Length: 159
Image (cartoon, rainbow, N blue to C red; front, side, top):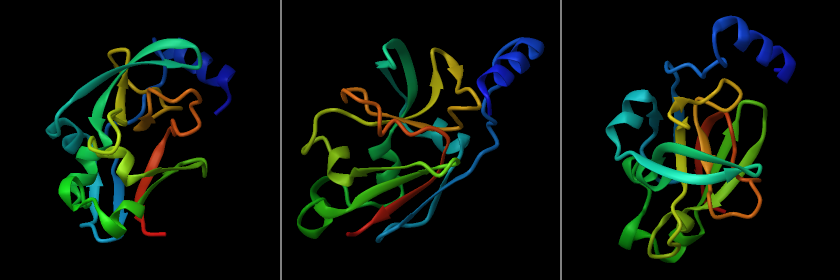
């Protein structure tokens, strides 16, 4: 989508184009129960809000901790995250082919005290079509290289 086209369409429709709430995103891989993330699951998990700077602009993102999604799918979190499980990687794939990874251990508070948000809302609204339906927010990182947008699949990978 080209920005001028998106902005023009947004003006005619009374606002920016928003991502569809009728999404399903597969979560599968190393030793977990295949799970589908949808708006219903996102609403059922504990909701969180993160203030962050997105390309130098302050923003408020809302969603769920990625660790809660991984735990829901049966990933080895908490005391089970030890030994070979520490090497498990969460690979996030975007609609445009972009891929980002984060170690499963980075999601566990006993390893890292900074939560990682799987966001479905920004500044009180659903994500724009060029961001959603879901995006990752790693608020404490100096660069937003892992702030993957338009997530369409999440995989657990054992290296």
